[in-house]
Length: 433
Image (cartoon, rainbow, N blue to C red; front, side):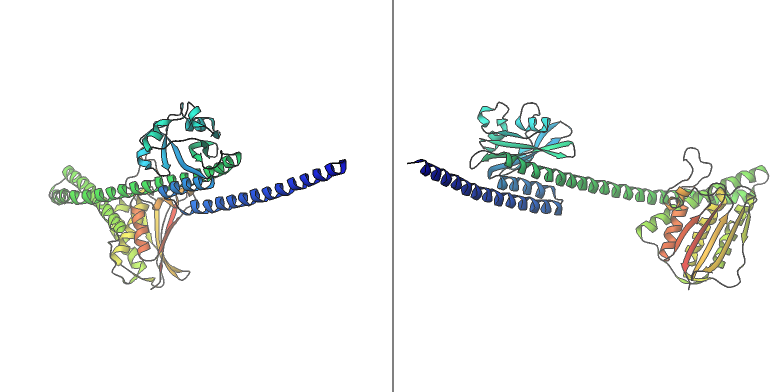
């Protein structure tokens, strides 16, 4: 051959290499596109379910498929023992594998977890860190292994492994693919764990709520009988006793009445929570409800030298409501106002038609309500004052009962206050009859 033939041969060889390279490149590109599409599909699947077992199984099956491996497994950190434990493995019962702890300091998975780096072991028989106990338990012989850390932000939560590449050895591209899948899996597993913790917390709250309701029912029932005896004898003693003894009998009777009111509050609260309160609705005048509630509590207000002023109205303010329940609502609001208004204070009651609704208001010149408590005062057992230093009694149920009763009547209740030292105004709004 002359020089020109050598040049031609070199050109042909170069062209052949370029064509083959392009063909190989196109195949690799197609494979990469297919892998990315599969990862996107996996991400959608992982985000669509929060069942832990389904998530784990889907992850390991996908890992084995994408890397053309014989098996895959997930190991998660046991926060109590600080050991890795199998959460899922292809072809094996994870509950049996979970009984075998994998040490952090003398295993390949432990090295991946500790160093927070992928490990590609082409020949497990030559690596002393290979933890053979697992393979012996499930009768699986590992030849090669690729492990990557499962991370949430900067925190490693576990290890995702692929074992025994079917054709050739695990590559850097395999490590990148498995790393992406591990990141997706870590987030999905964490979300599933959070949901499970939330479900358990919700169940615990339900149990606590039932315990509270059962206690209220039991306490209310058990206290009624002895309280009835106390009320009966205290009433007789007050009528028959004279002088100082009469004052003592009155104090006993007042305390017993106060206790009876607390029991009624607890009972009403329980009925509201259980939805067992029934309403007997009829057309009533809001002003008349205020008048009867005022008459019930006038003696209590006068004992503190408070003025209980019922403002006159020119026209009736009519609503369809259960009269006894609405009197209870207004009594609770008035009791609250009397309790917090100082001696010689002033409490005003008014009824009006406003914005196409029937409004009833209880306004006092007491200490007022801080802005950050205007909503929470209607919650059960809420106290504005610290429970260790408060000067006013009560269980914190009155206003929650008020809100519950008003909402049963398709109404609203709220509190307005300019702040501490400026009094407060409680408003109830109900549909007009």
